[in-house]
Figure 1 (cartoon, rainbow, N blue to C red):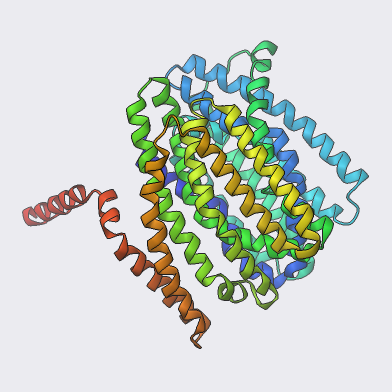
Figure 2: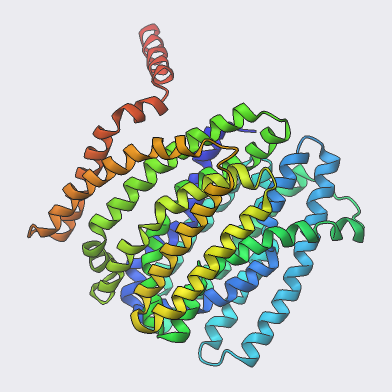
Length: 483
């Protein structure tokens, strides 16, 4: 079992790998298949995504938490794994059949792309990342998936050459996802023994999975329903604009998600032992860290978003710049709520508060979308998302105010907000200077990093183990002298 710091680094790499394909290929695909192609893929994926959710239900969080509790006992670990996985397998087969029926009965316009997306459901059936996350073996997951992700990028550039190649892109994305899941199974036999599982063992996981599935489906209502509603109420071009904006704003969240995934099993273990002081210390440090990152990324994207989008995706995606600026506002809300959720509510099994918060967010998002999308299209969807994320963060914060020092968290975060705003003013002013777009973006990025880094130098030094670094340098010098 690795330390939280090492696991955090490993999981950052894992999350980046998940996003790196769309990030690297987005400018190329946007120009090759255009807004319509990007929108078609995104719209059909948004639909298959719901069947993937129903395959896994709440297994990602529930399985992670359950494995973390029994990981020191191989017999219990094996029984827990197989009983949860057989439940996942049955759900996956049912969802696969239902999705094929949906395609046959309803999806005529995008049937070929939708059929290829079936492979995503297969990948969900094979998904056992929750096992390795519960064991806190993040490095294994990364090393098993790295070459698959690189291969994905290579295949896209080799075979996707024109707008008619959208089906090839879909096949590469879904097929390689299946392959990445299959590779992980090779390590299961080293950790898990096959044990007989009764129907009773499987059934006992249904209720807790359903409880954790409610927030998952609620979150999806303001994560994926935006694209479904845009596709139904406007056109796939608007879906394409929104999709590319999300690709950019999702990049900063990889760091936050990585921290949450790493800390969930650790906090479950700590809280199960009753170590409240240690748990509170982790939460305080985590919130300071994510707010330090999220305010910088939020204001940074607001500063460069409008000029960045057409440069990166092509002139057809000018509107994406506005959407990036809007969606960037959600980052501080997402970050704060992620720590509260993954490091306190879920480990403490406060599922009710979690469910209520995301359900409220989903309702708010749905209502605002219905009102604003017909008139403002993708801009309306962004506004709905902002309000949804704010509601979730506010409710979760209120629900823990009597147990956690929320005022301290907000007080610690305020300086980061002020310093990030100063950075925004300086960086945004470059948008009014006439110069090469690439040069401008590089200058803005450099200036933003320097200003924010200098203003937060004291905090940065506090989280970097200077003594350890100097000690390593000293040891290297001694070795060199001896040689």
